[in-house]
Length: 344
Image (cartoon, rainbow, N blue to C red; front, side, top):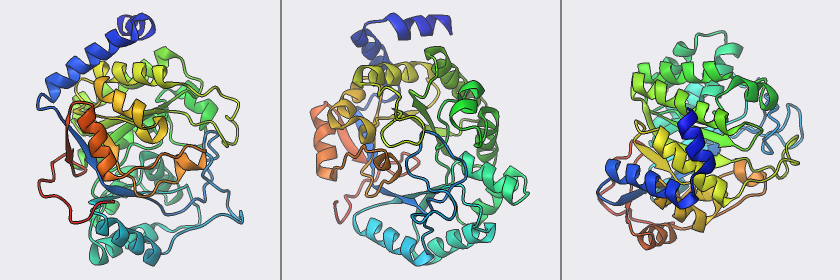
C-alpha cells in the first residue's frame, strides 16, 4: 500500500491521469465509452439507519415519509421504457414497516406487468432484511432473485473500513458484512457494482484499504461489473454539513488511483451527477470508460443540494468531444446495437 499511497499523495495530477488512462486503454482499446438509460426509483424514504451523510431519509412517522405503491412504481417504469430506458435501479430506506413478502410481490409484479432489468437492493438493504425478517442473507438473496431481481447495486459501501463506518453509519451493515453479502450474491450467480463515497472523515490510506478489499474480493469471485466513486455532498445532511466539500482535483486523483488499484474490475464509471459535466468528461481521461446513467430520476444526491441533469444527445456529445465513441449499454455492459426509438 505504501507505494500507491505515495503515488496518490505526491504524484502530479497529470502523471496520475496518464497512468490511469494507460490502464483504461489496455482494458478498453476500442475507445468506446458506454452509458445506460435508466431510472433510480426510491420505493420508500422511511429509514431507521440514521446515516449522518444522508439528506434523503425520513424517520418513521415523519410527515414527509412515503412508500410508493406498485402502481406508482409501474408508471415510473413505463415512462422509463418510453424514453429508451433498459433498467431500473430500485433502492430504499431501511423501513421497518414493510413485510418481506411486499418486496417479493413487487419483483413479481414488475416482471409480470412492466418487464425490465431490475438492479436493486444494496447489501445494506439485504443485511437489514436479514436482521428484521430473521433470515440468512443468502436466503434473502435467493428469494429476491427467484422473484425477479436481476443484479445488485453497490450502494451503502461508503468507506469499507470499520473505524469510519462506526462514526458515520453505525446502524448499517459493517465493512466485513457488506463485502460478505456481495460475495454471497456473486456465489448465487448475480453480478453487482461496487462504490466508494469518500470525504466522510477517512484518511487516504483508508481509501486505498477500501480499494484493496474490493480488489481481493473481485480476485475470488469476479462478480463486480463496475466501480463508481464520488465525494460526500455535505449540504443539507443531518450531521455532516460542516464537512469541507472536496473538489475536482481530489476527485480526479481518486478515480485515477482506483483505476490503477482495481485492475481486475472491468469498468470504471464517471460520476458527472455529483461532479458536473466537465469534470465527468475529464474523468474519461483519468481511467473511466463509462459515463454512467442518463438517470431519468434521482433523489438521494439531489436531496443534498447537488443536481445535474442531461439528455442522451448531450451525453453522447460530451463522450465524442473527449475523443471516444459513445455506446448505449445494458447493466452487464453489453452494447445495445439498435438505437432506441425515443431519446430523453
